[in-house]
Image 1 (cartoon, rainbow, N blue to C red):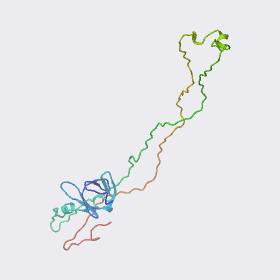
Image 2: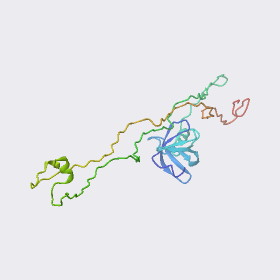
Image 3: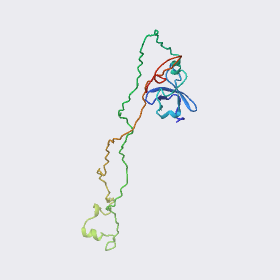
Image 4: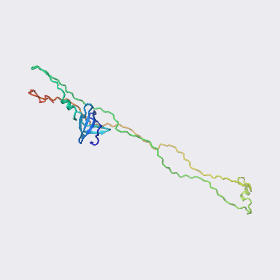
Length: 236
């Protein structure tokens, strides 16, 4: 945790209150500046850090539980003027000092802790098929006439026709087309699988804790002061 704390990071107390920014890092402690008028206000230990994320340092202590640094409230308290109650001898006077305390009320706040991203991708795969196709081939045969002198062939003599309208002793070109069958595909989209995503809410009992402040009175005696009860004048 020590290596995660750096100068310039914002520091928050256990109540979530911004304490200030880190202005110096030592071996075991780091200094937090609480404002422009109070430089280097608090000193915190690395062991007091509970989390470091997004440039923020979260402490497990309240503001009052931290060690005051130079120029902090401790020096202000030492030089703060005191108010003296003046009474005449024999006058009875009751001084009431109200002491306050904080009460904590827990409530559930919705925060995003994660998310699920579902993306549909298209992949190409090869499908193999076996299908019979037909193809024409040209077979050329030479057939001699019956008299062997170059007369008409037996087939041409029987049918009385010449293929392609060929006339003897005239040059011509005979084009004979050849055919073959080719395979074409018809593709149809079909649903082969469905993905169902359901979000459910689970309720659990969680033990949480926080810190609250309570004011107490500290009684200091100087000289001969007579009183009843405990030395501090308070009852728990």
